[in-house]
Image (cartoon, rainbow, N blue to C red):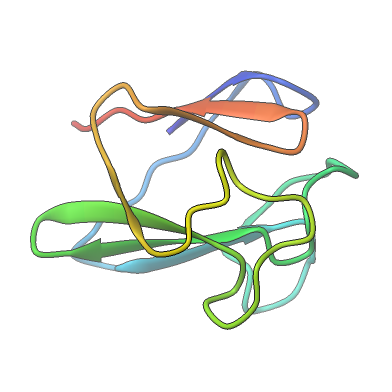
Length: 99
């Protein structure tokens, strides 16, 4: 995943699905958040990326509650992440790449 623009650019983030299949993203720095962004418009618990059945999925919030600021278009359920998908959290936009 690559940050296209926003307070957190330039930055690339890589995940290895065989090692960790749930990635928590947010502004809160604790041992539950895997990727922390210093962006006041990103919620403390912004979204969860989940790897399942050879696909990555994104879900707004922490799995129980939605984020305060929304992720891309406020998906009601897990949304399949496709190659070159661009989504936004706060003022930061991301480009999804698979290698």
